[in-house]
Image (cartoon, rainbow, N blue to C red; front, side):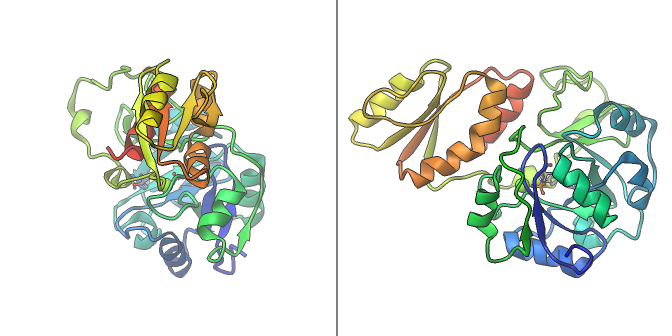
Length: 304
Ligand code: TXA
Ligand code: MG
């Protein structure tokens, strides 16, 4: 199906991707149209292993070699200089290309069998929460996609960390599970030197992850109290918190730690919609490690 120019949704460790042949501009255009995605927002090209890099990357920097050896397969995307045969449709007209090797048995089998670099944005309608189950993909793109490979819920739940790896030090363009600390950077993002002013990845400009209900952040441990106050105003309120929902509040998810919140976050946004709540209250987590990526996605869901 990929070789024929089709759209194949597949699970990765982070979220489901909407896969197309990265070298087929017509297929890439179909993926953009299916998602309703702005054309200037480039795609991540997925590879079976790091040995495939020369198919899409013109110059593999020592930093890229090091990061690939440490984190692949895994949720780290490297932005590098593209070979000039990668279609502008895939790169959004940039001279760079984003690449990663996903850590999921279904993705690995697909990439190996197809023997193609596979461009894959997250398999949601543009602006919607990213899909972490095959059902989420079907709900957003069921009529557009040719095949959905169902691998069950994605284990990580938030998208890969995107890093510019062209220089000597990684520059984080999108936060993810591979944290600044993992990359040997300062946790607060205050790196010294010239790399700091590099533009964020184009996709982070757009409003994202927005469910069709309100989203409000509560302080850590303050979710149930915040939810009860909203209920008192007559609202139908859902809760994602460490403690169970009190009476009168719709339970959406009880999460014991940050990795579990990350894994369930997008499903919780969609479940809150299906439960027809007016507002979903989510407890904040400390902005260190994976907590930075989770809070980034939550603020976007809450409308900035
Ligand atoms: O975990 C993930 O990364 C998932 C799975 C399916 O691999 N994919 C994903 O794709 O999140 P998407 O299209 O939703 O997000 C890709 C991000 C966007 O923010 C985009 O702007 C950025 O990567 N990006 C792609 N190519 C880029 C480039 N050449 N330079 C800078 N940012 C780039
Ligand atoms: Mg996306």
